[in-house]
Image (tube, rainbow, N blue to C red; front, side, top):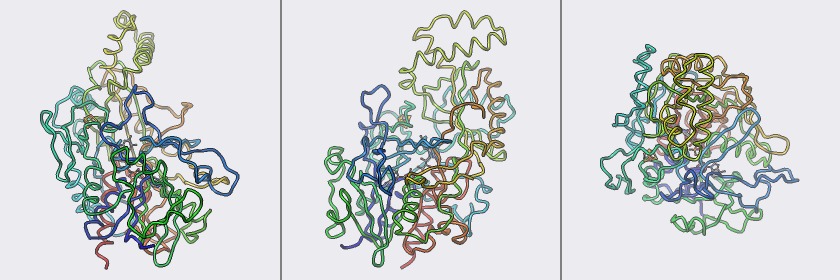
Length: 550
Ligand SMILES: Cc1cc2nc3c(=O)[nH]c(=O)nc-3n(C[C@H](O)[C@H](O)[C@H](O)COP(=O)(O)OP(=O)(O)OC[C@H]3O[C@@H](n4cnc5c(N)ncnc54)[C@H](O)[C@@H]3O)c2cc1C
Ligand code: SF4
């Protein structure tokens, strides 16, 4: 088999950047991505029958030493939807699946963390050192604050003024093509885009391609330069071979589905691909270097299996699985605000409060009307209940009359006075990913970790609720629901040596040459701000170092 110069596993913020920069330097690159390509019309939509929301592998347990998830190598996953949800006993984790990774579903925030977020990172990494890398990401993804003045932004700004926090409010840079009117443009990589129409569905994929996602930017450029991207190819094993690595994958829905979606036909470089070899349903490719970019859970799981089950990489650091963090994710809902909010208009997030001195960052969020439509009755009843509770405590008789009906109009009105808030912060990053005795990935995370941070967030949210004059539903430690995150970080932390981390500050895996990790898994502790820009900047830094070497 003729090797590729580089195989990249995963096509999110780490993988897309590295693939692009290596292709620019004339390296032969193959990207293996388990998810599909998502064209404008493919994204799931609320209310749509059989909408492809979930990526779900066949989880049937098997009686061999491999994991339940990957044990039945000839089985295709049940569904290849946009989101993967991993439910661990103490935490739910939601990530994306598709060419472009998390960029397909993220809320577009491109935020540079404060300098203190880099404390403890191995040299030379620090904010000042990485500034040029952030700049390169900015050039590619073109983030800009929302140019429109929305009711919900005005309300957010007003309540922060009331709470004496006006200087903390910002309109975060969003990687969205704002444009004007409704004219389609070709971006500078040749991808057609329509200007954002403020529909609020960024979290479910943008069916106007207004989001400057990775498939329309970094990956578009990588493919134009000859990089191959194979969707629906899930990597299951990595092993050293000759002077490089053999990467084993299974195709999840074959070339047929990929072809149907308008992706390039499955056309491997001659000689680099072995269809017959390996266990049933598996195929192999080889490369001189491998870049793992399957995300915090994906890359850590692949390496845990390689060290502990397949034993193809037995010398990986004992730190593998450590320093895992949900980035302090926290969510709250505001009902019955005294100020109009109109959360149905605008992108998924539009304004933020930077409370980095208190260790957190808060975003206000949209509630898309199409999502709320399907849940009108729920919206109405929750809000009526809260109004009634407030009535009994505050005796605001006027509201009693207003909440008696339960029609669509009322739901609409109640919706206009609702708000949602996403917070993230620098938690203790004390989680650990391990394989359980049946080979399944498990997360060891103590629910009390981060309580000091959450207490500060609760105080802020209570104040915000008062300033809005509404009822803020704030998760409490005694709630029976397990928390969730969309920002998993760590598992393969950077460190000074193998006793401190899994990779060094250039993404090189300790103990294995030409094996790199370039995604969220290498971030050694919570950033406390949205992490995508930092992951991309780190990937820029890693790629720069690799391409400088002969
Ligand atoms: C709903 C939501 C909103 C978010 N909003 C923001 C935001 O506004 N700003 C921000 O900074 N961050 C946001 N994030 C987080 C951000 O998306 C992630 O931090 C980021 O995508 C992580 O980058 P990554 O390269 O590590 O992994 P990902 O972007 O998750 O990419 C990993 C890729 O690897 C693929 N993969 C996994 N396993 C395998 C395998 N075995 N074989 C082949 N391919 C595999 C996956 O399908 C995926 O495409 C959001 C996330 C979600 C889910
Ligand atoms: S608000 Fe709608 S059109 Fe604008 S970026 Fe988000 S999904 Fe796309």
